Image (cartoon, rainbow, N blue to C red):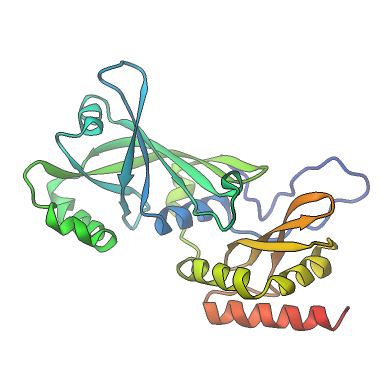
Length: 266
């Protein structure tokens, strides 16, 4: 089971009192957000041909209300043969990165059992999958295609450098995606294209770090992450909003106010 990062401080080698821990979404909330925003991952099944070896496949997916990934797969596909023999599988999903460092991106591995969707749940699976992947309407009714669903048993999350942990299925099931997630890419792109100077100023004001360049790598309802280029190498920091921002408008208002206050202190 993971420890919620919003309540437990990370331990670092340091002297003096620990710095205040910034509030962040829980690991479970971060994974639900990541899984809901992405559309493809890597499905690992157990190979029938080479017993005991993992077999990786590119896998489009959609998620249901409980966060369970749903796949539309052909009976001719190797991963389907593998699942019919042994339903144990994992789905690996990674965040699209805002810079050129893939190891700084969030990623998650969902482990569980992938089984055919029952007839009673078929209509729901079809609807959520076609909503996420509308082009699949051209083959969804082919006789050799059917829906499978991953029943999640455990999740492993990596949120970038030094941020990682396991969570049980009940933690994942109970979490909800971040409300700012649908607008996150747009916010990040806008900040990185037009407001680098403002992010450098916020890094100096809120973290005491002098940077020559800044890239926003993630944003959520409570704050955002920056990767900074400094005279001592690359550094990653988190900065929180003064309050919760659940819409793009609220996030913009919070950022404008933070920059205004920072300019008044320098």
